[in-house]
Length: 298
Image (tube, rainbow, N blue to C red; front, top):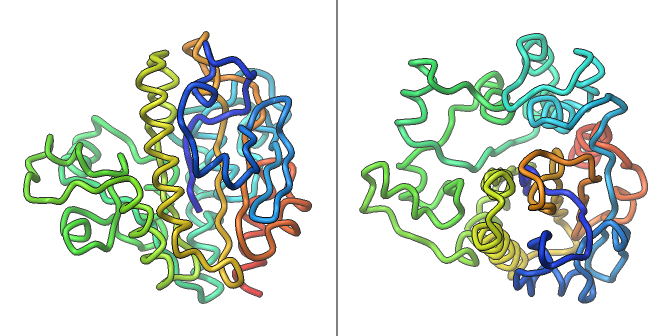
């Protein structure tokens, strides 16, 4: 599963929507030259499906990461549970839910192997300990499930991915010895790691950062890097025994005319085994975790 923060289905306008300004050969190849948008939100090809998911969760206001991600990774409508959209971190009232119902925990309870492939530098842990930062939904879910976050050693041995995909940012943290990967190489690594687990997650947060920046250049670079990761993941992909899922928690990067999140639906892109069946059963963020658990446990 590739989870990209802040990716919605926007207008077909290259002046505000970087999906129509970026070069995305791997994504468009999957979707028979279509680019995901409001008007092209449902696509079925021989290789993939695209469908829209409602990210508003039936709650007024702009969708936020804390509640959106909790919903994706638990199957419970977190915004309705606390009566509001909340983010970027999980609300305190959602932590008991994540303790027992997060996707990692549920899969582990079913006896399945799980990998959260993102690596975190020691500075991240120090910021958490000093309360300068708080755990996101995914990192909190990992820790609560007894899965220590991966770090520089796993990056060095090829058993983790950098959150920026290439690993360039790790040089800011004093790790000049770590290799910088091409996005396609990172994708090949991601798929290779995933072959050892029943479920593997990579989280890409720079899409949301790019949306807030309102910079077309930044947004295009971020999307093209993501497309390279996708291409590498699919290079040796086995369509008969694997399922790749791509989705998001709320809109943002698809509309650079605003600095805020959007109410746009988010894409659900599926490649591989049982893609059509999965797409037919999920129409909102609440449906993702239950179907993942069912398919992985089948």
